[in-house]
Image 1 (cartoon, rainbow, N blue to C red):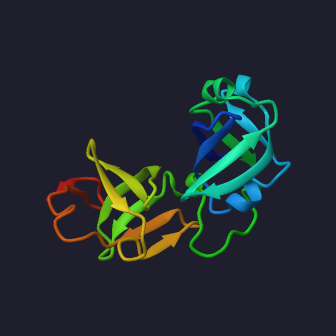
Image 2 (cartoon, rainbow, N blue to C red):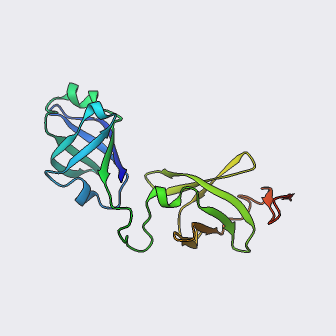
Image 3 (spheres, one colour):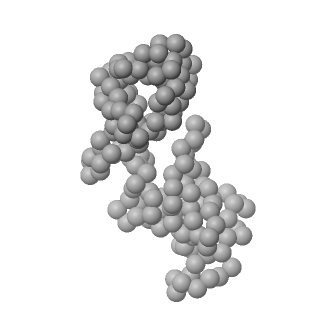
Length: 179
């Protein structure tokens, strides 16, 4: 299965290096020298990593065939994808987006809130986008607010901060609305 592991940002310097918005917990593996990444759009790749390094808190990568600033700008915003075994065991507290999207979300007391529609990757932390009754709420994906993730049951329990969803209509077991 192909998963997004990064997005190409702006050019860095004149020799074709680009910044990367990392979307993987294993950048040292996904962006190792010699790695070949599929691209979206397909016309931009595949791209082979010549070298990758951290520079002032950002990942910089040089790709084969991208050797000047103009070529680097041409691939800006291209998504980088890597082949991942969806059945492989991942370390505790590490999840792929596809494992979370569609999961039922309940409060600690069992009240159904909705389901995860997206995982938003930000520099500081990830957010779970949860839809319910034509609204969306964003929950920081940290243990304090998301104490339980059961991938096999496709169930997530949240304990949001006070005031974040107390005005949310919740769905009862019989499908009717309650406030």
